[in-house]
Image 1 (cartoon, rainbow, N blue to C red):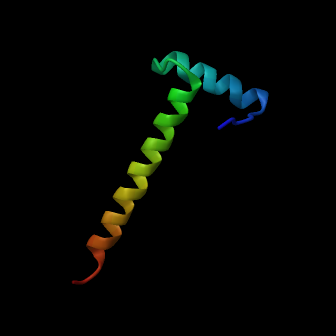
Image 2: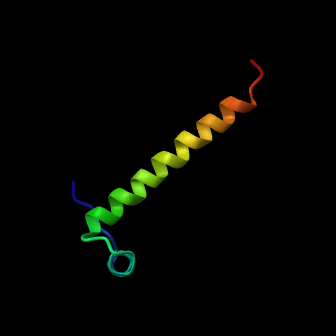
Image 3: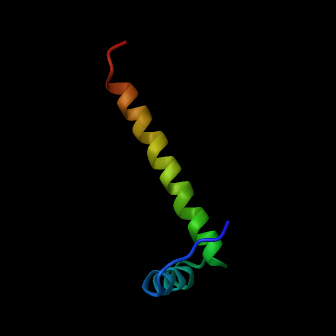
Amino acid sequence: MNISLPDSLEAFVDEQVSQLGHGTSSEYVCALISRDQDRLHLRKLLVAGRRPH
């Protein structure tokens, strides 16, 4: 998969890779996607917990 970013976002990603210790921009993007998956899963659990059984 290839992703095209505007120069400003590419610079931001490069900065985050450096600051957060990721080896590559792909590792950074994978970490973001993983966190988003975790957030969505947690949201589903919270919503399910609010429903009466």
